[in-house]
Length: 202
Image (tube, rainbow, N blue to C red):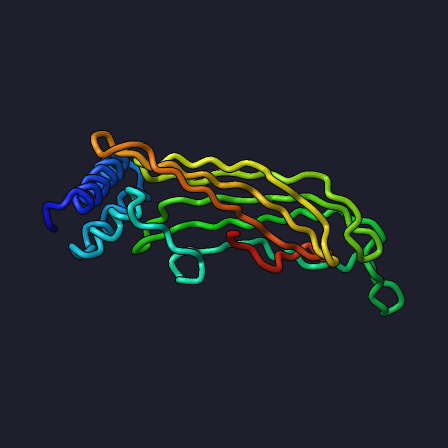
């Protein structure tokens, strides 16, 4: 690494992150032990790249790069009754629960994860009502980053339901200037069957 301040910030961020993971590993956290082994196998270039993400000097890539893993529930329409050899449709009115989580993972180490969950009503195959939705930070592994997620909007559109959360991230390392902040809208779109069609960032 060179001696420029931007690279020094990356190196500092990586070293602090490594120390944090090592502390968890020494306390008996088996997941942290596995993560520490993965970090030990990184090349110098990978450590510098990860340090950039951790410090906020390099923007975390969107899911299209393949570095962000998206998980979602895949609920399927349930057939409730069977009469005379013919499958009957589900009840006319039903409640659906959906969720989608997005995480940033580098070299197999999950750095952060945020999750959206929603509850809505379907009647005769149509989405008729939104009951609730929630926003969660389920993983925050970076000691230089603060993450929060809050509800913004939820609405029915073209036969689907949309849930949105505003995710705010702050990055700060003592001695390297002020806090850097970023905001993005995380969303999921679900259908009347309770399946997540898509999710991502706006």
